[in-house]
Image (tube, rainbow, N blue to C red):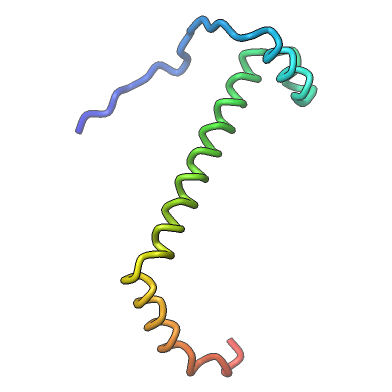
Length: 88
């Protein structure tokens, strides 16, 4: 599998609603208020992090509902129950 090498910076022109830019700028921390490029970069980083978190939580939920995984967790729990009282 070949991975694509991206340039360090990609320059694009976007048309953003003025109201959205104003709201984002108003809500942003002081260090981002004067730099729209940085504000958009941080917003996209946070968006990607939220998507990844949601994806992770969904995978964990699917695992928790999987009968095979539930059986294995019960088996492991039973094996360690005898060590519950040893203070570790």
